[in-house]
Length: 136
Image (cartoon, rainbow, N blue to C red; front, side, top):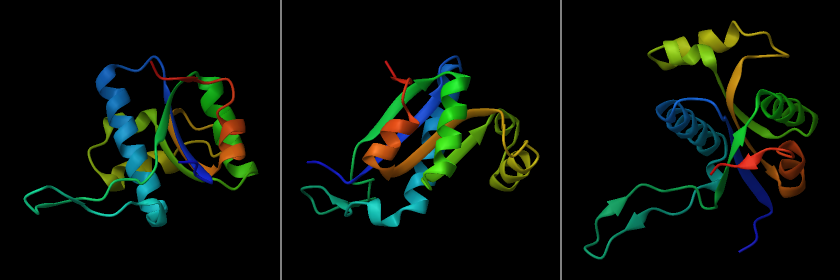
């Protein structure tokens, strides 16, 4: 199935494994929260038990360099893409309010990004992630 929109998550390639997983999980929830129309229907198993909805389309995960992250960040604004971010300082916080404070303290044009998630028209996302490689 071809989707009009695309979702991409770029994660700094030299993070520890637990950090990559943590950043990816947080960023995916950011996209889901910002784009409820992208959510699929709830799941049910054969016994009728209900399960939570998932994003209704694939998410492409990229291993990124700092330059890839900076380019995607700029492209998000230039192309008006839905954007979720994770900065290095957020690893030392313990809750959402502290995460927002950590992000607010970052330079607005050059935050210390370790991850970014984008959702928007396919062509715009492809341009934003150009040069980054799919995560192995």
